[in-house]
Length: 452
Ligand SMILES: Nc1ncnc2c1ncn2[C@@H]1O[C@H](COP(=O)(O)OP(=O)(O)O)[C@@H](O)[C@H]1O
Ligand SMILES: [Mg+2]
Image (cartoon, rainbow, N blue to C red; front, side, top):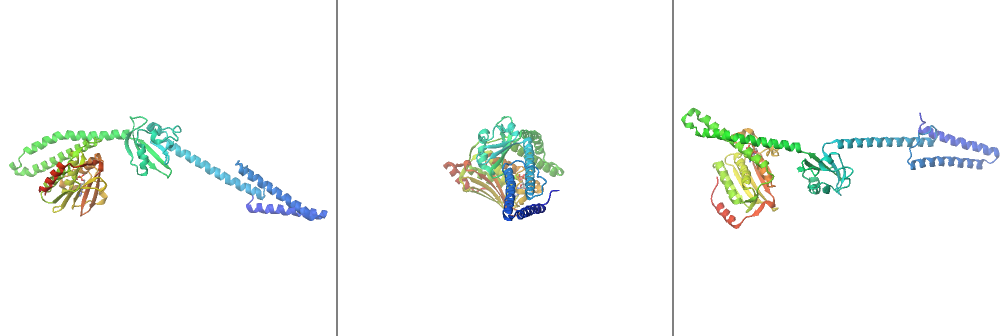
């Protein structure tokens, strides 16, 4: 058991007193007490200074301190304390290094590629083993290399300049092997460092393709039998047998719903299979007139329909798909608005060079919790109401896909009991000037009374 700090002090003071007392006695014996005392004090001071010097040397040289000697003086105490502090620091360092090694081993073993990037220089600091297969990056070979240069032709500079707000790249060919499909995501995890994560999405993409093909094939195969059933149902005359009338009517309604469902599924499959649409100039004046006519036909005079063309420009895109998206919104507005309500279609500039087509109604509205999920296939707020109104649950999914193919986005605002507004926002690159002829045409059409 090493002596305590207090006993060390006591022992040192005792030695000091004993040496001085001896020197005094010896001095008295030879008749010169003061010089003897002074010599003793100087010797004592020199020994203490020497011990202090030895300790300072050892600390300075950062050598491992030898285990403290079991002596009891104050210097032995200091050595003991220093030894203990050093041992503790070394233990902590060792534990930290072990922990870091374990983390690196985990990161190295991950199947996803991880690349630590310096935020300012955008150069590689470290990457794991999967980065070699997925991105062609190797540590330490590529340490300090420019990330954008090494990962060409991936649009990494785009991702890096967007930083914290970067949209992930969902599907791209790997720069190491074009047969590998990868997704890329940038995670800013500290002020100075970013993490680039790349994942092999080949299997996921193949599954997604299988799902798409399956839905498309099933819908396609259902089309012919449905047409046959539909045809025979049309040939039956319900008035011939009164008992059969409600049954035949119900069968017709259901077969119509099924046909609509199949058509919507096919439309979605067609949209999903495309990366881009054939762009053409879409004259918006006739489009708005058609929407007005369709709303009127669906509403059968139960609603007030109002169409405003404040933008007086046209759109660049696919006429057929845009019409399908807009008419889906108009049909929803009519379906989910009780009689006496008002439906307003407005085509107007957005103040930033783009345009927006909005369909507003004074209908039932949608509770906030459903808004984010409305564009999912078959998602409905209330399935009973949808069934009543004959929807398929695919309309807004179609709208979302069409808008995505036009780099446009859908905004939904709604208040329960007050109504909803669905707005399609198009960027400036989708706006085209309306030619004079078309403008005149539209004036004529606006003048013609139509609608509800
Ligand atoms: N204008 C609207 N007012 C209220 N609810 C709406 C409106 N438009 C869509 N919805 C809700 O969103 C759901 C999804 O719409 P949609 O995809 O077009 O399918 P559906 O075939 O049911 O109309 C609808 O079932 C309905 O609950
Ligand atoms: Mg709908």
